[in-house]
Length: 263
Ligand code: LIP
Image (cartoon, rainbow, N blue to C red; front, side):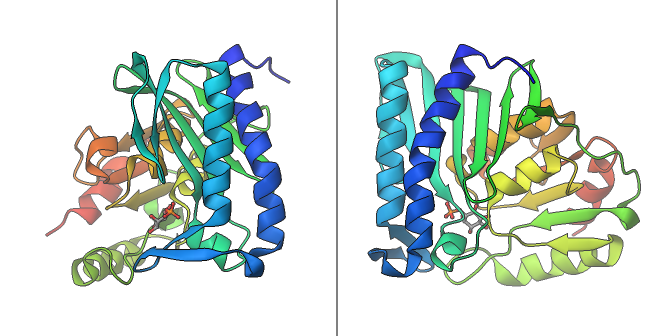
């Protein structure tokens, strides 16, 4: 058991509160009032409610911090140095299809750097947390990225472009090369959990492009604090700004990056 910092106590408390309603809503997923935001991009009543709860709870504890919210957008705080980056339901498509693989994702940015992250799947009750310099944890157990050194043994997660999003042809070419080089590919549909799974050593790597900051803010620090390596797919240093992410254990990064960028 580890002692939670005051900051992590605030973050976990907010996530637990939002998760209670989310779990109930997930149970009644077919009755949810769902409106269409764009092609394949749904906003549910549960999403909005969870975001409101998270905002209220975090504001109670840290009244001056700003927000970047998936649904509510940017909300400037009195404190310009701190900003919460939140996805109330990452994996909305899974949620709406009754697939129990979605998460609340909360990242805290200070002076442009992510200093804390939480990814919580309320259905499995798995809470992944990390703070800068303090390590990454799953329900209080310390996390380490995998130790695999050969891509032929590696399970790699990815996000596949879909209707209305991404470049399908080029993605298929890249996928073809990675498929041929690894033990298995997974497309689970929740970027924050893909990153958390890399941190936990369940997956050996993950890549995706076209993401939003709230999909990855919390997951980035989880991987780094678990000893992993995160860049953009082309090796660039600003995944949060570009939406392009490649996260692996340190040993597989170069090899996977080479395959992803062959043409
Ligand atoms: C989702 C990501 C997922 C990605 C989807 C989508 P949302 O976030 O986490 O991995 O491939 O296209 O962006 O929209 O469910 O919060």
